[in-house]
Every structure is written in C-alpha cells, then in structure tokens.
Length: 381
Ligand SMILES: [Zn+2]
Image 1 (cartoon, rainbow, N blue to C red):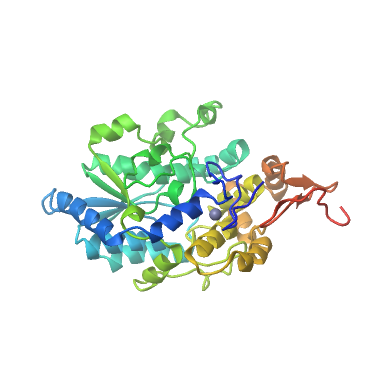
Image 2 (cartoon, helix red, strand yellow; image 1 turned 90 degrees about the horizontal axis):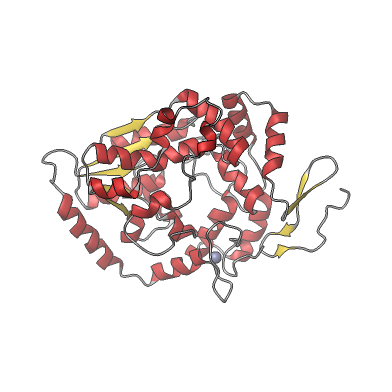
C-alpha cells in the first residue's frame, strides 16, 4: 500500500495509476485543470448547446442526470442559466431519503423551474438487493448505483433526447479505468465504478431478468444507435467540489448539519441524500483503506484548500468511523440483525491491510499517509 506523495490516495484504489514520482493520476489530472483554457472550453460547450437548442421545438433540449446534490445544481446552473437550454432532470430515488436530500431535490426543480422525471426504484428489489449484493459483492448500494448509471441513458434515449449531461468524469477526477480527459460520457457505462448485472444475482430465482432490466446499462451499440451525445460537464467548466457547494448554496442547497451531525466525513455537503446509501462508501475503507474522509481530503488538498499534513490526523480520525445512523438505516431496511451485519462485514475486510484480533475486532496494519507498518499491532490485542 502506497500513498500518493501529494494527496492521501492509496494505490489500492481500483484503476488508479501512480507516476514515477509517486503522484497519483487524480492529482496529475487536477494539475492539468490549472492550465486548461476554460474560456475556450466554455465556448465548446456553447457550440454544442447551439447544436441542440430548440432541436425539439418547445420541448426539452437536453436531459441532465441529477441527484439534487451540489453538483446537480452546478450542472443545471450552467445548462439553464448560462447556456439558456431547456433541460429536463432525470433522477433516481434512494433507499431512505434524508429530509435534507428530499428538500434539495424538490428545491432544484423549483429554483431552476424545470421538470423532473424521477425513477422510484422497485421497493421489493431494493430491499432484496441491499442484502444480497452486500453478501455477494460487498456493495450494499449496488442496485441504486446501477440504476443511477443506467436510468438516465435509457430514459433520454426513450424520450428521443440527444444530449445528456453528467457532472464529473469520476475516472478522470478520482482515478480509474478510463482516466483520459474527454467530454464524452459514452464510456461511463463501462467505467467499472458499478459492476454490471451479475448473473449470479439471478441464480436463486428470487429476482427475474425483467425485474433487473432497469439496472442494466445500455450497451455501446444501443447508445450509438440512439444517436446520443452524453457529456461530462467537468470537461467544460472547472470542477471543484467545494466551489460547487458554495455555488449551490446560492440556489437554496441545504447541508446536512441541521438534520444530523454525521460521523466519518469531513464535511456535511457530499452524498447527503440517504444514510443507508453511505454504507457502500464506508466499505471502501475496509476493502481499500480509504473512504469518504480520504476522498474529500484529497480533493481539498489538490484544490489548495488545505495541506496534506493538516489532513492526515483528520483522515486518521474520521475515515474509520461508520456512523450509527447508517447501520440503523440499513438494518431497518433489510431486516438484518447487527450480528449478521458484522459477520458479513468480516468477509469484506482486506486481510493485507487489516488484522482481526482474538475477539473479532479489526485493526489497521497501515498508517494514514505513510503506508504499511511492519509488525503494527494494537498494544493489548
Ligand atoms: Zn494524489
């Protein structure tokens, strides 16, 4: 396990690359942003929008894939207010909405005066999959994630819309399989952030292929046949999570603190629409040694909001914490007992970077910002 020399990302992150100086691809890609001609990029976006504006008469010009979060507002602000497009929002519901998340989604439609098409996921399947994909894949939110990726493409194609707008290219900004800079979100469907529908999920007959179909990504052939152009907004405008938050506040975006002071994160504005959903984010900690606190710390370090040294103690303190409300929400949703929950969790701990003591408690074998520490053990266990 190696840490990036500039940020606190580790080389265990799937798809991330480190250069010869020990710097991760996400840091290198962020540096490129500083030398990008953003006026020229905005002009590219304007040309693209000119191509589609009015293409459906008085109907929608484009679709914006949105959760209602800070990034959604940033996307919508550019498409509707700056580019003067007539967008429709495509959104997928959660397991369990926080009040704040629900208010934010309602607010975005009102603040920008847009229609919102919303997929309420199959509740039986949501509950079943929350349990099954936790047991089988260590990804309790797989079903919702798969819908988030699949639904906007399918819906936009069914509505005959040609332009579909996403926020950031996750592979480019965080590091991942397709980490080159591109405006096109065509390959997002194959970016490996969400595993495709796995036939093993169908084996016991509790789910049919038809029921799972909405979670199936469009194929590249289907995408090309639809004549669609899916884009990442982060190619056209500079992308900084904290800046997006500051912009979003100006349009009525609410952070979570008034509802819940959550543990395990450094901020209160990212992934706040559901607490059960956050379980998937935390599991990255036991699989790869980094979770929400690391990810946000890395972003802030890259953007110059703070230093690597300042962030090490905070990441050390917060990343390992799994908020009780996340566990409570998940157990209530799936009907699982705490004992079952932690037994399944044991399966997903990465034995290379954690060890389990004689009472079943897991301990890190690594040091945040440093890497593996030979012989690291707790004093008593
Ligand atoms: Zn880095």
